[in-house]
Image (cartoon, rainbow, N blue to C red):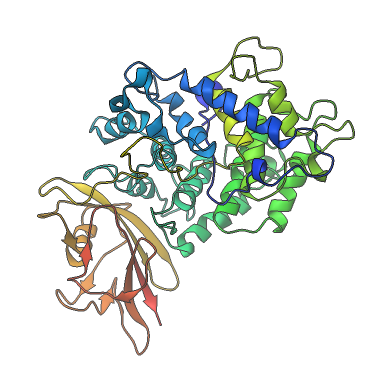
Length: 464
């Protein structure tokens, strides 16, 4: 997930503070009206990038990131369609692409699924219920690293862990609940903290435990993403590590332009990622910390990169717009982080959300299972083949013992029916018992007969 062809762009968190809605802080040079105009013109440009078949995802699925920009800017992707043909709206086409058995192609990596999850959510597609057979939440959880707790995907690719947290914490249920338990998120929060460089920022590769890597200069883009991940996972903006990240970004601000001095020079993408990180943490990108002596802000820099057609150029020296840069800029100007729930559609009859309503009997699918014994937390993606539109907790736990990634999250369950009294050898004792919840809901006694349906996050917790 890097800049230009190797680094797709992302957007808005539901917890972000909208720049356009909070007024202009003292010293800011871009007014709310100017920001709104730039945002709206950017949305108009992004509409022109839609293919004739209604798609944005193609050639590596690069421009699908437009969904997060649209949602952050107040446009539902279902309202984006070519030539007045609502049947070719961007959401429907994207959902069909994600549902295909061939997606995301050969040799997928965790960031493929994170990208899909973040953008599906912004498009109003429940990412755990894209189709009866496609659960993007489980797809991401399947990359959990048992031997390197807190990481998703190869630890060397720290980028994958940051975007796992952005996806799993930021893409909530349709009702607005966090899908995965806080205990699981906290493990990756610790991992992100452990990878923070000495200068207060982060880079795309792992630095934990490596003094040389920790002493290396940080990257503007990844600092924005990592601080956003911390905040969307519940870390407050007053936290020491978030403050250090803010100070790192502040130290890289160019006095005369408001651009951040990134490793490739000041550019729209880096500014967009940094501003999205600030937005996610509720830190004003036009406040005193980010208004230079020359009265320039990161928002000023972004606005200066917009061309007459509404698109944004990547470098100040460029003369033509970039789709990637335009997505990053619109997302940041909209006040968002790295994904956001979509607004209410304006297309008649179009629902805000679409989701599979049940399993397809005989069709394999994945479910997310998280087992928390009070000391350790073990997540996994479990492949089940249901025999009806719903299944049972007992059937899921049986499948978890032989068809889970990573393996070992469930090794044994007793008894074989009725109320579950022991999991993985840990038995109920006194007031400490095994309980279960689905999608962040309330905990109840764990029973083999408990109903589980498509896309559920099954959380098993031992305790009082």
